[in-house]
Amino acid sequence: MSDLTKMSAAQLAKAIAGKEASAVEVAQAHLDRIDAVDERVHAFLHVDREGALAAAAAVDAGEVTGPLAGVPVAVKDVIATKGVPTTAASKILEGWRPPYDATIVERLRAAGTVMLGKTNMDEFAMGSSTEYSAYGATNNPWDLGRIPGGSGGGSAAAIAAYEAPLAIGTDTGGSIRQPGAVTGTVGAKPTYGGTSRYGLIAFSSSLDTPGPCARNVEDAALLHAAIAGHDWRDSTSIPQPVPDVVGAARLGATGDLSGVKLGVVKEFAGDGSEPGVLSAFHESLEALVKLGAEIVEVSCPHFQYALPAYYLIAPSEASSNLARFDGVRYGLRVGDDGNRSLEEVMSLTREAGFGPEVKRRIILGTYALSSGYYDAYYGQAQKVRTLITRDFEAAFERVDVLVSPTTPFVAFPFGSRTSDPYQMYLADLFTIPTNLYGGPAISVPCGLSEGLPVGFQVMAPTLADDRMYRVAAALESSVGTLTPPAL
Ligand code: GLN
Image 1 (spheres, helix red, strand yellow):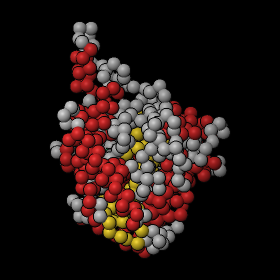
Image 2: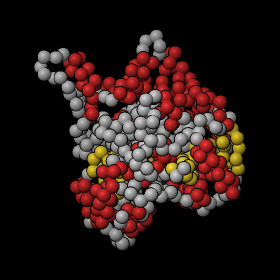
Image 3: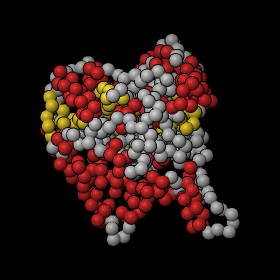
Image 4: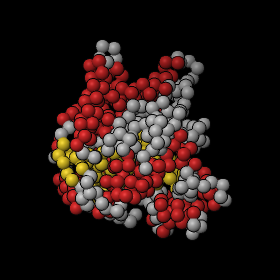
């Protein structure tokens, strides 16, 4: 493996700016690494070799500058990239090349990053393992027989396998954090509205949040800072300055947490977590106490209803958002032989184009929104959402951040959770409350359980994204980063 692929984003940006390495060399090293390992990892659905080398050449020519000039990045395939295939890992969008860039892709270019390609995911970001990708699963670089998490397993695996130093994910219920946890990488969900959804293929519009994936906390903060901030094209984008996440990560890295209060959620204790996950979590709490933090037990009584509320709200919004895939406007069209009605063509297209999990969500959501049931299901779930938000607000009057394991179990073997959807949904037990509330949360590696990575989650109040970076960087300064076995 070339040394360039081992470097952090911060180191690469510095080396390129100081002309110690050219952006083209850096891009080529990562493309070579993809050629060498991606057949085994399958993190990418599309590699844009020409685009990457051209973007890198523009950096070397001095035409593009920016804080991350020349640093490669991989982008989850649910985000629109102009002229570059974007499928959301669904057959229904096979071959679609968006005519425009998402706002965050524009910002990635403005920051000088070099996009290597599009990463694999569960179809339409519904899942926790990438096993629901229509193009085959991604394999976890720690153990190729295990899942890399989901839905953004491709983004997490790409950075864990040193195919890219940075990647973009999206988090609706945990899809950045849970893959981060099970691949030993860092994944952050910004405050909802802190990163633009313009150009993101919508799953659940009131929850979807793009964010950074990286191998260390400072790199995640650098990527966060590059993509965040108000966007007039997204009506839920927050018109406020982005907190200084990079400064907070650097402050945290000094390893001083004196005066910081960490709330441990009582209701999460022992809630189905594997023993190895719990012991890594408790060892991390001890490490944080040594850095000066104070641990406080807090009660969030409504968190236990988060999973059921999410599985009404997210499918309801998905059933409405996915109505646009009708065989007329984008991608796949089936049965249009001149003899069939529009309705028949739509129905044949959707039958052939959507996978089983996506169909399950559409059916669930359509039922929850149907006349006579709306108040009992969707309306009730929205009330629960308010109660969960109040739990967070009450907790943040007592503590600075909440902490928990990111996910109850380490990377599981393929096929072990696909027969019962509920078993798959449990992967997000600890991540979903934050999405319903809208605040930021990060997963940072905190140790191993039976040789597999465990993630530690830090949840902060809305718009206090800097706080979670500080605590995560402090933990990282104590436990270090994780390196998977050589591929
Ligand atoms: N695993 C969750 C789901 O299947 C969350 C997905 C996500 O965050 N995109 O809905």
